Length: 249
Length: 310
Image 1 (cartoon, each protein chain N blue to C red):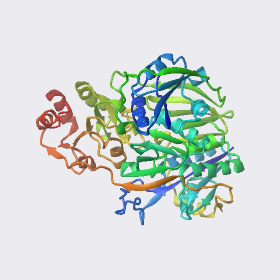
Image 2: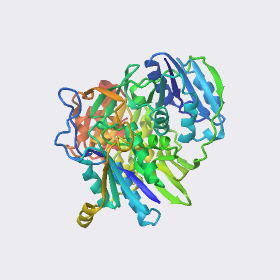
Image 3: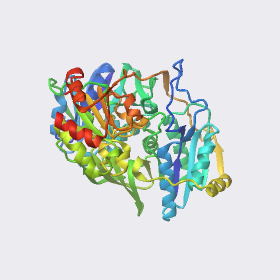
Image 4: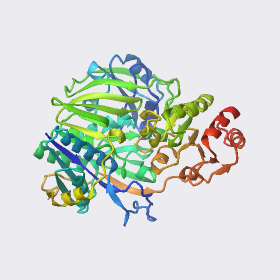
């Protein structure tokens, strides 16, 4: 069974982004970029499925600028067998990415597509679900455990009240949550091997997809600022302030 | 223009998140309808009909809708989606799971986690873990939206008297099935709706200590209990307590963070709280930058002392 793993190149999770002074967007010039942490978890899970003998091939895919190649090489260093870059400089939103992925799903016919539940830049949490709907596949989102057997996946999901387990027929789409696994450290030998693994480039036009964005960003603003707080010297003062000043207890 | 709100419910009653979503729907302009899709959900449908500002309730019933499986729920929404200008889900696990399927099948963009409605086609939403707010405009004929419930007041649960209309339930997709669940049962207020939250971080050191230290304070204040990702990852607290960018988004009147350093991703989940108290023995902890009241102290001393002083 082939496993397709979409990965996104995003601003590194440690970076505290700043809003541009002209309010047109967030300043990401010269900022450190990394693989979306949830997608890293997805690559790790796919590689583990291969190590278990459940998956025969792990294919990483990324959509976006040329530099996404670096993200794909990282995926291959973790253990993906080959990679596909859908190259475009145009702004990509989840619906377009889902359509691009669907074209690849039609082509590659994977038994499982596994990707992160959300990207930490747009926090959209849509792509996996949209892909599943477009390809008419079942989905299991926010996965904290995945077991594949007999043409089905049994997935434990993190939901608002705790955990829920669903069974879905394959092929299917799974999106990963934080506790699904802890990704392995990438070793230098594997980084070197990854440089030689196949990386193919296609364009949205090659896939017959209109990838134009739908939502227009009118403005990007700073969030409301909290006024400076105060340090309190002891518990007694804290209680007094909460009662009489803040009036919350 | 008419909006459709997909109700979050447990078949017997309507969950609070639905009320905030109704408010968001009303802000989009036009009438507000509510879909209650479930199994033996007549009581929930009746409750939805009483929400102030709701003009009509649609009730779809069937075993295949019992557990909110996204394939079936999305199909149910699509079956009645025609003629609605806005389709809104609360940004709960269920809403986030299902809404994008609806958007994709309608070939429209989804606007996730809106914190404000500026106009029927323009919405505000947090990006980069809430470090920026984007104002986005959709030209699509239908707006599919998930609503950040902390951004909107809850519509009154009573005062409305809408008609309840039965709609045919869609068939089972046959591709997914519910196997089981482990849902925490608690007398505490629900985390996302609680007025006071006491949250513990990794400094608690163990699940025994987490319970021993945090529970009495939460009990004293009638509070919900939250946790940082680090505490949950370490096994000190269950996942449904996680507050943060990818956990629960909360905005209580009072948020007390004990032993939480205040990573960007945690702040994303609680920085809209009205009053924030931080108890941490590290004076450099980033949490102090958002705290209204910061107590530099060892939580193992300070929290029990706080319980006694209340």
